[in-house]
Amino acid sequence: MSNEIRFNLNGKEVTYEGKATDRLLDALREYYHLTGVKCGCKEGECGACSVLMDGELANSCMVAMGRCEGSSIVTIEGFRETKRFEVIDKAYASVSAVQCGYCIPGMVLATEAILTKTPHPTLEEIRDGISGNLCRCTGYNAIVKAIQTAAKEGNGLW
Amino acid sequence: MVNGCMATSLKEALEARATKDMIPYGGGTDLMIEGKKDISYLFLNQVPEMTQIVMDDEYVRIGGACTFTQVLESDLVPALMKEAVAMIAAPAIRNTGTMAGNIGNGSAKADSVLIDFVADAQLVLGSTNGNRVVPIADFYKGRKELDLGRDELIVEILLPKTGLDNYYYKKVGARNALAISRISFAGVIKIENDTIKDIAIAFGAVADTVLRFKDLEKMMIGKTLEDAKQERKAFVEAYDKAINPTRGRVSAEYRKTVCLNLLNDFLDAKGI
Image (cartoon, rainbow over all chains, first blue to last red; front, side, top):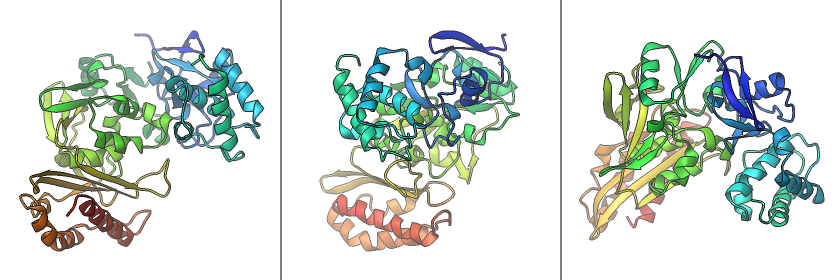
């Protein structure tokens, strides 16, 4: 049996030769040099390391590499190539939803996860959707507004 | 893979569990905090038998490796379980954390385990020697002490299909979201013709395991609502005596007070 872990990373089939117990977060940043994935707490509290795993939001600090075998992982670097990213990017900029920016890769992927499940989310659905992504700058209201704007402007994309 | 095995069938998973020293990996949301290096994980997310929710004549059968999100999105899972699972952490954790992981971690604070207790859930424990079915209350032998063999996996959680509709559930945490339970409470009651046919009450995050006192529940079973009202004072006093909270992040006194407040609120809500 092969010792390599095979998975899809940002649309490309890749192999990982490290241990199955390694953290996805560490592999993404140090092995694949995808530093848009931020390390905040390493215990699943802050969401800075969010990625999409098989289309669902996941904290990469809490995923072992072995779990990724056969899965598809999308980081902010992969997501930024999409049309939906363009809409979210514009929406965040239009309401000044970004200050220091550390939480934003995670917030953007949380936004994608929210809109994929509910293209026209309620305020409560938005707040629940970003409840695992902490932001120390904005107080969240601008981010919530950005997500509402993205839902409106991206009508039909999700 | 090095330090791990991705099982793709239940047979493969049980054989790996029997022959290798591996830790069952559900969603990793607790294991990865520990982040131990010199161990091996047995990955279960590709085991079909453990990642589905199905119904038979008696039970809703939830695969051990089902995520909390799967439970929330299932049409088969009772509302009480969904309400508790919806309170667990945030979407990213609910997308990865699993039902068997919540049980196997052994914590009395585990939100889905409270519901397993109040619902008299049973666990299907599998090994290469076959399955055994264990009631949840017997599975928890003490603090972090589980009736789980080194060769066994929590394959399924069996929830009764009926009888859980009339419930009361409250989770008390330090904040509304992303909160670990300080005290959790679930009560289920079955009333027919103003008579209590069945009642179940469980307290989470109070002691080494989830607490349920079936002897005390008998005080109410078979009583009319009027008689139950007469019995209420003695009933609550009996719980006051029976609950012996441990001191943790919050004091034992606080835990006791909140437990009894929630019990009283449950009885109020159900007309007792």
